[in-house]
Amino acid sequence: MKSNGMAGQKVTSFLPAGFLLVVMLPLMILPLAAVFIYALQEGPKTFMAALATRDALFALRFSVIIAFATAAVNVVLGTYAAYVLSKTRFPGREQLGIILNLPVAIPNVVVGTSLLLLWGPIGILGKFLEPLGIQPMFTAFGVLLAHIFVTFPYMVGAVKPVLDDLPVTYEEAAYTIGASRRQTFYHVVFPALRGGIITGALLTFAHSLGEFGATVMVSGNLRLQTQTAPLYIFSQFEGGNIAAANSVAAILAVISFFLFSLILYWNRKRESKKAR
Amino acid sequence: MIGIEGISKRFGDNEVVKDMSLTVKDGELLVLLGASGSGKSTVLRMVAGLIFPDEGRVLLDGVDITRSSPRERNFGYVFQNYSIFPSMTVAENVEFGLKIRKKPPEERKRQRQRLLEMVGLEELGERYASQLSGGQLQRVALARSLAYNPRVLLLDEPFGALDAKTRIQLRQAVRNVIRQVNVTTIMVTHDQDEAFEMADRIAILNEGRIDQLGRPSDIYYHPITYFTADFVGEINFFAGTVTRVEREGCEIELAGGIRVFRRGAYPFAPGMPVRYGIRPEQMTISLLEPKSHENGISGIIEKNLFLGDITRYAIRLSDARLLDVRILNYLFMDGMAMPYDLNEEVWLIWSQGSGIILADA
Image (cartoon, rainbow over all chains, first blue to last red; front, side):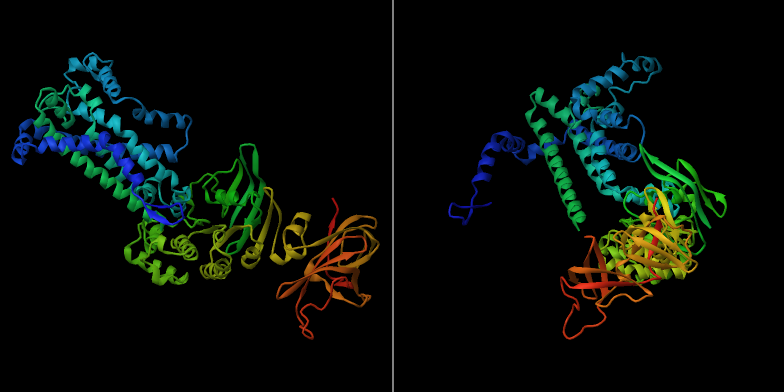
């Protein structure tokens, strides 16, 4: 990083960056390093053995599948919500937008609690479903529901600005040419949204992967049924199985790091494309 | 034949279009000319079906289409911002209307090529919007809206986003394409030169109403309202009183005592207050007094501005008024660009066949 020295000459200085690193070291860098150090301190063989247990593999697989499913559902729901909020006019539109963004403001644990209070065995709706043998909570479906709830604003937040920026004249042009609303969305609006949808999907996936607060409430933390990777890490650590916890933690960290790098790279590519 | 009948439109408290009626003949290019806020774009959007009027009707060959959607109308619409779909190539943009109408690929290709050639872009079919200039984008927009043989073509300030040079180049190109295709066209603009160059007829819009509708020369030489006379071109207006009315013409006494004569039949009576206008290019400067068949007024040259093909003068009259005069630099005499000097006393001469008279409301 260059700065002008006292005499006005350019001087390469690492001071500002160096100071930042010193501050961030205990906060972020060292703890992350600790995970990998612990995971590998007994050697790669022990690491693989800890990872290869039924529970660990299930947890990782389950988390990834749930993340994919959450992203898939949100692509459809979130895009639709963004379209309605951006392109249609109705009384209460602003209020609806605020409501749909609430999950970001509410602690995830409270989201989990609210779902239990609605759908759980003694929940407002749940108590009618229980005698019918339908119980969405403490199942994979319940986990999916919680993840969708919690990550929904990220999809809307990624897609809606793109829609807002798309001049209404593009759609008007399509209508005057003779396209229906559906054809206009498919041929004109949706292609322009691709970038936003991919960003939203990546964000949703990443947040679902790391979701803990709501999941710990609605899943019941049932081994080999509803235990996601974060839940596995927590349970193993609590149970004193540091190596087991760390192996999955390390994998999760690597996947998340990779995902967010992808999001960053993707967004930078979109920005440079826009600037042309 | 496309027309609007008693159209009104309000946005909140603002009455943007007030009881407007007009008919466009088949094959003609009609221009709605007006300043920002005159309601011209709103009228066009109501003709297209993008918005609906509060009152009145839109008629196509006698059929009421006021409430039909843009899809049903089969019109072409060119936007000021081109609105070329960024995810499609130029070729795909142009044939979009045909694709929607489920035309077979060979027909789509044929039409697309024909139109791209017409607008001079036959080499650029595979390009994307981000690779084209503004002028090229507007040509694509035109080709796209003509590809499906629209019943009416609507142009919404099509050259507004372009630089001056491109604007002028594109005007004639677009006019030629429209003539070739022979489609009834309504264009909206605030640019007078554009309106005059392209229109068969012009409607002057003033605060949501049509002040005058006619051919460019009619609008220019026979404005019927003060607004139109002042809005189109430049004009010097005098207050005056009719002194004499004859079969061949009428005489008017201008404030300051000068009398002018105007040939023609006028429905005036002596004593009527009128406004008499003469355009800057209709006058000539002379050191000699006006002859009996000419009108004239004397003054002192206060400003002269050499503009290449013309020179503009500001002449101070005896009653302290300032007149604008434009003289074509026809003769470049003795190395002098401007034949008349500042503070020189001169006569302004003009024909008794020129002059715009408006009854003073």
